[in-house]
Amino acid sequence: MCVGLPAKVVRVQEGTAVVDATGAQREVSAELLDDLEPGEYVMVHAGVAISRITSDDEDETDALLEELS
Image 1 (cartoon, rainbow, N blue to C red):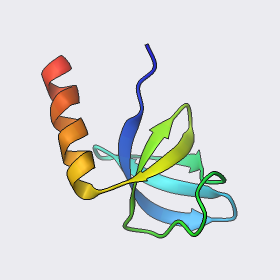
Image 2 (cartoon, rainbow, N blue to C red):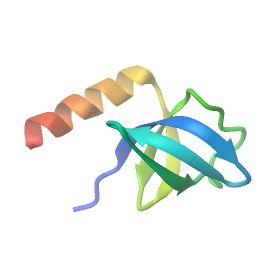
Image 3 (cartoon, rainbow, N blue to C red):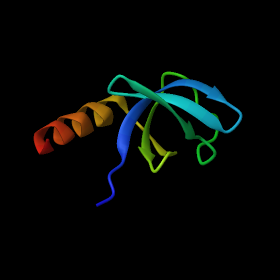
Image 4 (cartoon, rainbow, N blue to C red):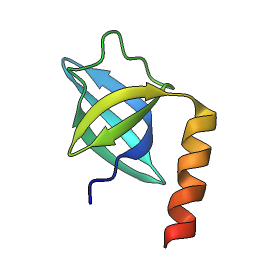
């Protein structure tokens, strides 16, 4: 099963971004998203930020993942 994880962008630099996903920061590829800015929310899959999401989307996804665990 493939699951994307929501994350908040902390820092962006030359095709990569540092994101925070439930307190864990990691570097991901940001090459699919133009003009990504710190503070935005993204969906991350396999180390790649694949789409922008809203903070409401992030909250909803976190709640669903919590129910599954």
